Length: 445
Image 1 (cartoon, rainbow, N blue to C red):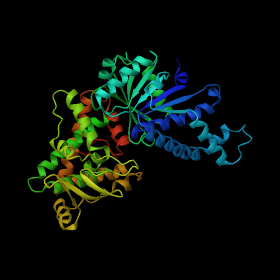
Image 2 (spheres, rainbow, N blue to C red):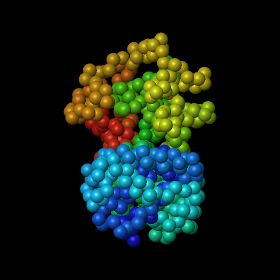
Image 3 (cartoon, rainbow, N blue to C red):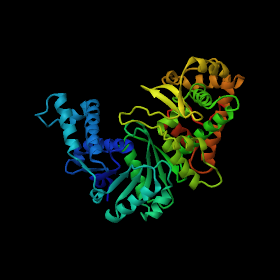
């Protein structure tokens, strides 16, 4: 069966969730365009979107319509050419509305898992829970054709485990989109020795069809992106504990978060990033990695304490940030959680200013991440900045240099242990998936 034929029966499981909705949108855009092409004009497409909650599916339909309108508005020239023979479509608004309506006609929303039985491409985006995923894939294996291919959005679970225990016979790959899938270009492709070669080639083609940039990863829990992020986060947590000799918990968290954003020239500090991903997700991935990677203890008492207190981070349904290690108001950090007092400490100059003084001044030549991200000469400016950072004796510089060295060690570990095939792949995932300006394997330290 050719991939073009498989596209005629595609499905997304967990389609109303944060990741599933983005994957559903990408597939809807692709199928909507395929329907218009000359080589696909005789094909009938159906995109089955399954989730467990009717209200969530209603929200998914609204999301798809709104996003398809935006997509069509940006593609007006191409759509006008595609609809050239439709003399009834004159205004751009008519073309846009026709494309959106016809694309949504391909979509079937359902709460019935059995509706996926006829699919030949199934994209799974449920919670990162091994037992849940195994249960689902076993059910799908019983009801779907032996020709069906499965794409799991797991961010940490070994593909070999899912393949063997669900008896999928090499018909599953890790297809790890980054959040939000509709925006993030990065896609990690995870395979193991028994993955079918024709599935691997199809996955590469689908990556291009969905306009993503593919990075291959070998089947070791956490893969490249989370393999680095989780260990990077653990280092930040360890640095908080080290600072507790001289600072209380919220002060230490604030210091490390500020250094990892400003001194390391990253888009977010490490605790803001953990909050964004979700403390619950961090704990889940950490548990998977600890269970499946031998010879390395991957645990965090601090993460477990935050979860026990019900502080989970993540986003609200409207995309705004939930409170986690940090408190947020309209996207701005306004407080830091204190584990000792079980409450947030509001940011205030009375305790923040002394922390800034303790860190010391940023080295000369420093530019914020946002400014450098648009700078064609960012590589030269980063090299100059980090050279001055190595000369600085301030507390902020010393913490930052220690962080850079640990980040590089993690990147090299991913390479040495065979998770990544090259240093470029390690660096590429951090550059494209986490929006870092430089990869962890560098010459800065």
